[in-house]
Image (cartoon, rainbow, N blue to C red; front, side, top):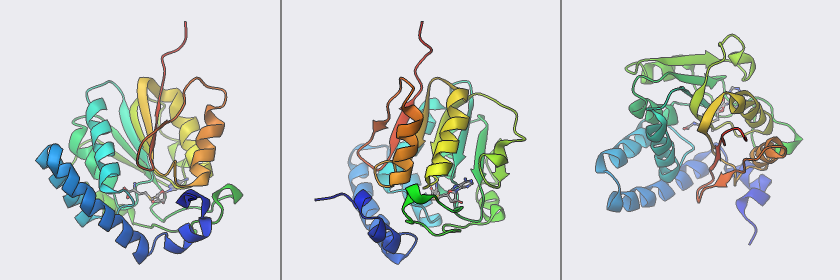
Length: 237
Ligand SMILES: C[S@@+](CC[C@H](N)C(=O)[O-])C[C@H]1O[C@@H](n2cnc3c(N)ncnc32)[C@H](O)[C@@H]1O
């Protein structure tokens, strides 16, 4: 049986609508039940709470992975970032674990920009909009959170170059994913991670990773969800 990644028309039909929300909430309910069997109850409660408060495209397992990566990297030198914030669900999970680390959040806050032919018309322009004010309000209690509104990577132009320990990419599109990899990879600390949503699901996202890594030593670590991780190797020699 062909995976959903090979059915762009079906993805377009489901994406952003009630069917997508029904699918995500059903699968997440099962995942939360299973997480409750062997994970810290407080973390599972947080994942469930965030899912209730904000619309998110992450399943409970995917949200848990964002939380877990953030927690594992929070004590290291370097900032954290997310490109693709939407209503701030995944950003909230990072806020909960980042401590004093800087968190840079990039989004148009008007939804998706136009895709390219690599994206197979799966999404609509401005799909997944949420206002900057709404996300700022949601995350107002967390220190050191910086919002960068506009089209990435232009929105990063005025930000001084800094090192990053962990970056979450959740942008759905080929060009946005490639831009995220081009900007953050050189700034990652050795061992630092870029976690991306939708690598196994969206052809454009996978293509961006595969092209970007063609001349590099790293390979994506594909997770059982739709996510993949890029772990920066130390320089050779
Ligand atoms: C699927 S949503 C992100 C979901 C979010 N991480 C969550 O937990 O629910 C994708 C987001 O990527 C943003 N986006 C995609 N490409 C972008 C770009 N080049 N610049 C800024 N924002 C972008 C869209 O505005 C949208 O909010």
